[in-house]
Image (tube, rainbow, N blue to C red; front, side, top):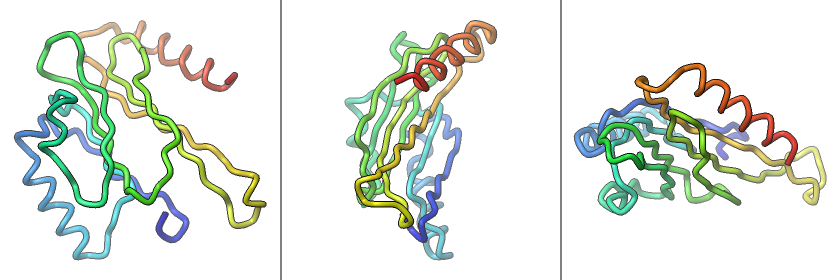
Length: 149
């Protein structure tokens, strides 16, 4: 991570296919201003897993959770700088949402190298047509269960 800070760009892209070139131009412009991101988190990507290879970003590894019910909207994509250590990525079952969880390990300069810390990041897109109450209950349960693992 640059300067020991994790920098994440998060956006609702509303179709990665339609807005991919604009995303690349934006990232290039930000890079020219000295702004580099460790992760690029995109929601409402509208892209199937098998089509991710059509949307590369140099020096990033891509992870995703696509919408599985046949509808076009939804889905999330996470681009992670290839120098970060992702130890696990998985689709998480939360009612009314597309959710990707990644876990990464890191060590603090003030602790022993054997004392590694873990960070979990959830990237989600909530379907606005689904029940808010069921979504919140399901999300709370996932977070509660994650704390016990």
